[in-house]
Every structure is written in structure tokens, then in C-alpha cells.
Amino acid sequence: LPISERLQRRIIDGDKNNIVADLHDALESGIPALEIINEYLLSGMKVVGELFGAGQMQLPFVLSSAEAMKRAISYLEPYLEKGQANKKGRIVLATVKGDVHDIGKNLVDIIFSNNGYEVHNLGIKVSISEMIAKAIEIKADAIGMSGLLVKSTLIMRENLEELNSRELSSIPVILGGAALTRTYVEQDLRKIYQGRLFYGKDAFEGLDVMNKLAE
Ligand code: B1M
Image 1 (cartoon, rainbow, N blue to C red):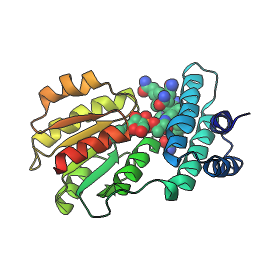
Image 2 (image 1 turned 90 degrees about the vertical axis):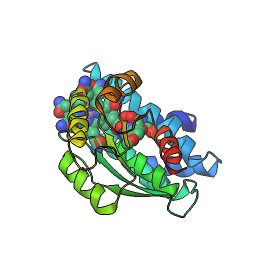
Image 3 (image 1 turned 90 degrees about the horizontal axis):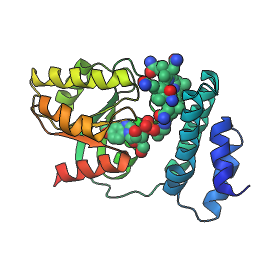
Image 4 (image 1 turned 180 degrees about the horizontal axis):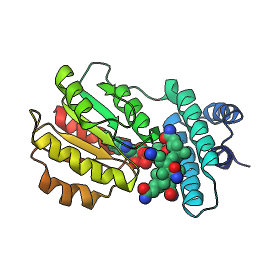
């Protein structure tokens, strides 16, 4: 199999042991680390999501795929291009309450950190109170929330309402994660939130938002 398909397979099979050798080969053959993530690994994860959604893959196997993905990203992290080293701004980042999905959020952390932002990654299942406390403590320039469950989109709405009623009522917020749509964020949720609200389709769109905020 060509390396692209091999890598996709390793993710689908949840093969975290053999994926490293393939990643090494891919890097050796000159494919940039970011391209490996965006083109090959994420396409494998997409298939996993489709199989799981169709009832053709059981949860423990999805977990193995997630582990292979995490192993791959941590292997590739040193090879990702680094932008400006000086700190352009600070962001509090978290997966919202009730949601354990963190691969996308951690990718956002890596991409932002590599591009000059100080990221305070609070982990998964994080309440809005924790995010607010951290944002006040570090004088954050933005709060980034990630969520993959449909339920999480409702939590995000509640979080925005909570922010409205607190000291940080106008802090910029970036929302991302597979359950969201641009329309939901930029039309429905924007009507609710007093501060500036942005949608990040992927980590790089999130980065664009941070860069605009930092201007
Ligand atoms: Co779950 N899961 N899962 N899961 N899982 C989904 C999300 C699902 C769509 C699968 C499906 O049914 N097809 C489905 C949700 C359905 C729904 O709500 N309608 C689902 C479900 C149902 C569940 C459980 C409820 C299953 C169960 O227990 N019966 C359970 C939930 C537990 C909970 O959260 N309370 C569950 C559990 C798990 C695992 C633990 C096994 C594992 C997660 C492991 C982990 O993260 N540590 C897992 C996985 C791996 C998935 C899928 C297959 C892949 C997710 C992923 O990592 N994608 C997923 C299917 C799918 O998404 N299509 C699925 C790769 C990742 C890089 O993408 O996170 O979207 P993503 O990030 C992207 C962008 O969204 C964006 O940038 C990234 C790309 O650059 N982005 C941001 C994300 N956050 C951002 C923030 C930003 C900006 C951009 O700014 C702040």
C-alpha cells in the first residue's frame, strides 16, 4: 500500500505500535508533518467516525483508533513548523462539560502554541466556572471551547449565557468541534453572546481568529 493509505489504515485499525514506523517513512519521504495529520490521519479518523455511526465499529475499537491518533500526533509534534516564538496572546482552551473528546482540542493547543500563543489547556469535561476562573487569573485574550457531541452545542450555548452574566461578559470566544456548524455559531449563538464570537472549522481557522484578535 502507498504510505497515505497505510497511515489511514493504521488509524482505522487502531494500530498504535506500527504507526510510528510508517510515520517515520512518511517524514523520510519528505511529506510535511502537518500534511500527514491533515490529509492521512484525519481521513482515517473520519472513516472511524462513519463506521461507528453506522454501527459497524464498536466503541473499544474507536478508543484504539483514538490512541493511535494521539500516539501519531505526539510523534509528529516536534516536526511541526513553529512560527513566532514570542507570545502573541493567551487563551484558555477546554473541552466542555460532559464531553471527553480531546484529540481536536489538543491539536488546536499544538497549533496555537507553535504559533506564538500561550495556551492554558484545562482538559476535558470542563465547567464554565473553571474556564472563567482561569481566564481571569491569566488575563486571557480569548476562551476556546471544543465539543463533539450534539449535547455539547447546548452546553456551549449555556456557557455563553453564563459568560454574559459574569465579569468576563465580552471576552472573545472561539467555538470548535465536529458537532457545530458555522450557521449555528455565526447566526444563532452570535445573537445570544454579548462579546465577539467565532467559529473555528479546524485548528487553522481558529488560529486565524487568534491572529486577528492579536492585531
Ligand atoms: Co465519540 N462520538 N463518543 N469517541 N467519537 C463522535 C463525536 C460521534 C460523531 C461518532 C458517531 O456517532 N459517528 C458521536 C457523537 C454523536 C452526537 O453527539 N450526535 C460520538 C459518540 C456518540 C460518543 C459516545 C457518546 C459513545 C458512547 O459512549 N456510546 C462517547 C461520548 C463520551 C462523552 O464525551 N461523554 C464517545 C467516546 C469516544 C471515545 C472515547 C471512544 C473517542 C474519543 C477519544 C478522545 O478524544 N480522547 C471517540 C472518538 C475518537 C470519536 C470520533 C470517531 C472521532 C473524533 C476525533 O477525534 N476526530 C467521532 C466521530 C467524528 O468526529 N466524526 C466521535 C479527530 C479530531 C481531530 O477532530 O475533534 O472534530 P475534531 O477536531 C477538529 C475540528 O472539529 C476542529 O479542529 C480539529 C481539526 O483541526 N476543532 C476546533 C475541534 N475543537 C476546536 C476548537 C477550536 C477550533 C477548532 O477553537 C477553540
